Amino acid sequence: MPRTARIERATAETKIELRLDLDGTGASEIHTDIGFFDHMLTLLSRHSLIDLTVKAQGDLHVDSHHTVEDVGICFGKALVHALGNKAGIRRYGDATVPMDDTLVTSAVDLSGRPFLVWKVAMPAETLGAFNTPLAEEFWRAFSSAGALNLHILCHHGHNSHHIIEGTFKATARALRQAVEPDPRCTGIPSTKGTL
Image 1 (cartoon, rainbow, N blue to C red):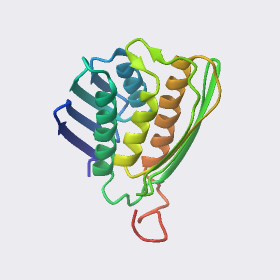
Image 2 (cartoon, one colour):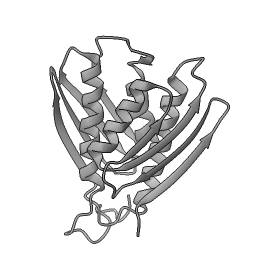
Image 3 (cartoon, rainbow, N blue to C red):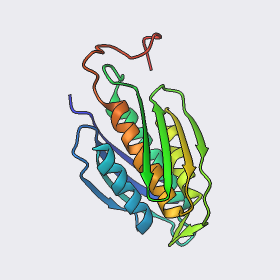
């Protein structure tokens, strides 16, 4: 069965349509009107090999917060839908990725229990129109809506662009492992029998 999902979310603050294919090639079409965020979502798609389409309209005259957070919610919900009962997946994934001056580790458990650990110091507050604390908000919304355990640690780095890019690339590669079918696992990868 295809592991795909389409999520729509409309509030007084945002209107979002997100599609994904877990067994894609990393193709993406991203339109949020937040240039840096579009770049990060494109990297996320490419390094996870998840095909991703995002069309988002938000109250950017206020700021970017609602758009970034709501895209994270939609991405998490789409992941849950596409995975179904999670039978036969690896469940866990981790990656450590260098990005010039920066080194980031991300570890994910598709456990059904949402939790984010964010150990990332950000030297600069803004990157263009993107407020750097929104990176944490995106991953928090994603982990909560996706019912997954996510730990992101920046070991070192002094360039905020590189640091955030490292978090997206490392988490993309961790997700790629976690959602991958495990040929040795035929059922739910948990002693509880459910995730």
